[in-house]
Amino acid sequence: MQYRSMTIKDYEDVVQLWSEMEGVKLCEADSLAGIDKYLRRNPGLSFVATDAEKVIGTIMAGHDGKRGYIQHLAVADQFRREGVASQLVSMCLESLKAEGILKSHVMILSSNELAKRFWRNLGWEPRSDIELYSYINGSGQNT
Image 1 (cartoon, helix red, strand yellow):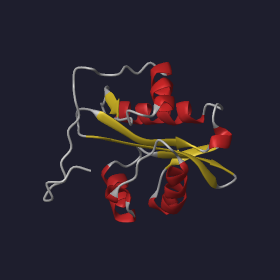
Image 2: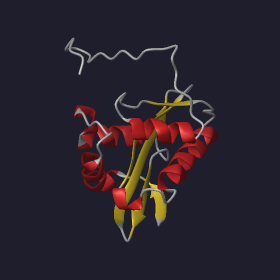
Image 3: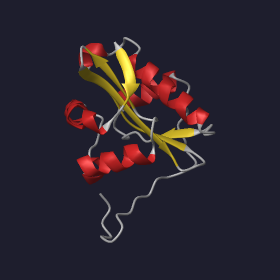
């Protein structure tokens, strides 16, 4: 198992993995251009795990200067329960900490019980004091 920073060259492999994951929701921002922009804005904060050059795990992270945000944590089914996801999370948090970011958030689909258990087992706590609202600039539609 190898771990390294994600690059845009990984795009096809990571999108393939994400599309196979039940709890990962993809949107227009996950286009090649969108991911390229994200990786350029947040260099060294997103990672992949590989096994014989195949991407078997991903995580993306970024920050706004105050808080970190983790997205698209995914591990191929056959590599789960081997510590891959925990290692990817640890790498992101260490990279965020090196940038002075000490608090991070992750958004999980409310129906994704597996993800909720995973994050709680790592010591993350759900928030009940805030709600998330989204707006697509220019469209007025919420998707």
